[in-house]
Structures are given as C-alpha cells and as structure tokens.
Image (cartoon, rainbow, N blue to C red; front, side, top):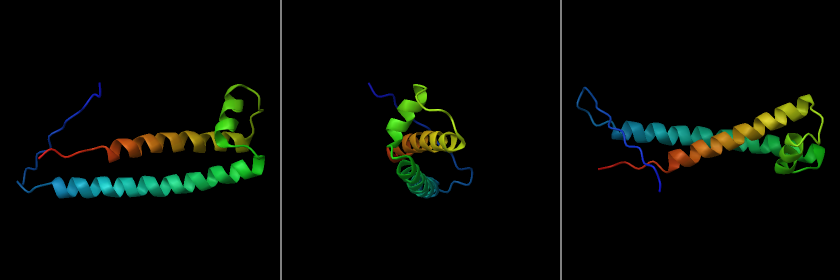
Length: 99
C-alpha cells in the first residue's frame, strides 16, 4: 500500500499560492535535472578513466576489492548524490495538487 501525505497551505493574504508552489516545484525539478546531468558526465569521466561502470565500481569498493583513493572517494560521493537526487526528483514528479 502506498502511503500518502497531504498538506494544506494557507496564504494570509487570501491570494492563491498554488501557482507559486507549482512554479517553485518546477524550478526545483529543473535544478535537479541540471545537477543530474553534471553528475552523469562526471561519472562517465570516471568510468572511462578506470574502464569500469559505476555500479561495478561501487560494488567492488563496498566489497573491499579496491583500495581507496581521492578519485574513488569523489566517485562514490558523486554516485551517492546521483541516487539521492534521482529519488528526490521522483518524489517531486509524483506530487499532485488536490482541487
């Protein structure tokens, strides 16, 4: 079962804030998409440099098959950020406004 959360926003001025909130969500999604593009390019650079896909790198690193280096610390940080931003993007895309 999907858990749903509902919030109510009240504008003291009586002006509808729906347009403002929708615009803010679109802006946040755009920023996430730009960040995802930058991270994906960075991950591709690491993949080319080390001839290894990021998921394979992460598996090997977490299983202690690779020795840590500054590049690997940066690579894993970029990968974790990618996963976190993908999750945030999905949550924001699923928001619906009740009428």
